[in-house]
Image 1 (tube, helix red, strand yellow):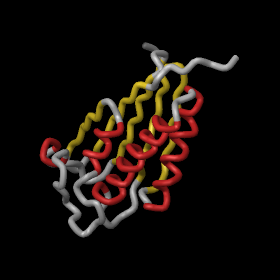
Image 2: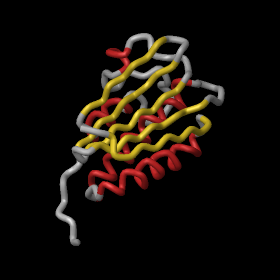
Image 3: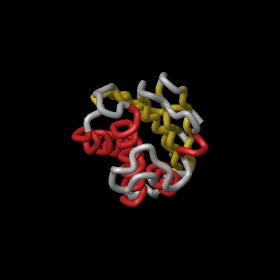
Image 4: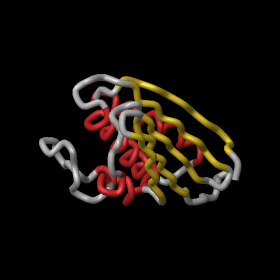
Length: 147
C-alpha cells in the first residue's frame, strides 16, 4: 500500500479549533469517496483526539497540535494527531474507559474508547514531558463509481 495523497496542518490547542480539525480532515478524506457513515466516524475520532490534546496535553496553556492525514492506495486512511504537551505516564491506563486526569470535563474518560469504536485501529505513543501521538487507521469501503 502506498500513499496516494497527504495533508499536514497545525493549529493552536484551543477548543474552538476542534471543529476546524475534524472538518478539514473530513474534507481531505472525502476525495476517497467514503460513505457518510465512514466520514462521520472519522470526524468523531479526530474530534476526540484533538479534544484530548486541548484538555489533557496542555492543561491550562496553549500549545501546538499537528494533524497528518494520509490516503492510501488500498482505500484506507491514516490520521496522526500530535501534541508536544505533558505526555501520558501510563498509556494502558489512559486508554481504559472512564479513566481521566480531568474529572471536571463532560464525558471524561471516554475519548480513547470513542476513537476505538469509530476506527479500525488506534495506537498511542507518548513520552512524559515530550508529548503524544495518536494514530487512527480506518479502511473505507470501495464504492462503485458512477462514471
